[in-house]
Amino acid sequence: MTEASQLLPAPHANASPGGGPTRTPARTPRREWLAPTGLILLSLVPVAAGASRLTQLATGAVAADNTRFFDSPVPVVVHIVSVTVFSLLGALQFAPSLRRHRWHRRAGRIVAPAGLLTALTGIWMALFYTLPAHDGEALLVLRLVFGSAMAASIVVAFVAIRKGDVRTHSAWMTRAYAIGMGAGTQVFTLLPWSIILGPPDVGTHAVLMGAGWVINLAVAEFVIRRRATGSGRASRTSGRSTVASARLS
Image (cartoon, rainbow, N blue to C red):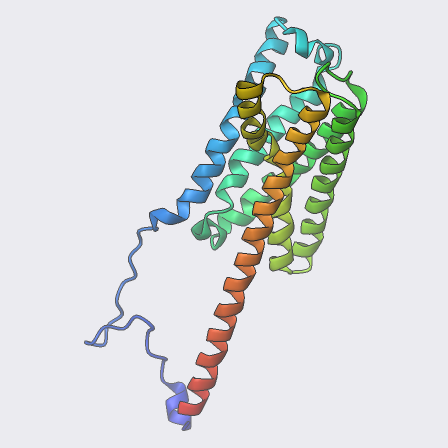
């Protein structure tokens, strides 16, 4: 390649036959909003349940299964507010157009602390609130395990992004979000059983609750692996384009 050619501007990737750049359509594909919309819909049931619980605490009309929260309401209030922010705002982080925008980083500064508060208050409530009659020791252990895993995932994601490792950050935040959304999926694991077979016993209740977290994590791992595969293909394609450009120059 000559020195003069190096000073010339590279042709625009979307140049028109007449030499002028072709404008890229600004409209965002609707398909990319399917995942965020689905996640928001999944979170509506637990968010509504949390709002109902906050109303009961504020008015003093506490239902029988919520009396354990009345003497120490701060942890449950913080938990409900933080999980609402984490689930709704976190869902928007899965929109590709927003991930490429500065908004993603700004929202992440809210989503990550909200998720950490969700996990820590969930652990506190599991340890210090009286267990309801339909819960048991097995479910207590599951809540401690998944709550700790959620908190650890957010910490790992934070350390990764501080090092500039976007792929690791994205993977661990996806896992944390999957755990945080367990309450939404648990509606679908518990409700069919209750309708068809009646209220589950303590052991079955723990299994069905645990299934919600496991299902979410399985989906998260699928998304993470698919995302990594897509990035690998893009890197290989970019590499071949670079080599081809070098040969032509």
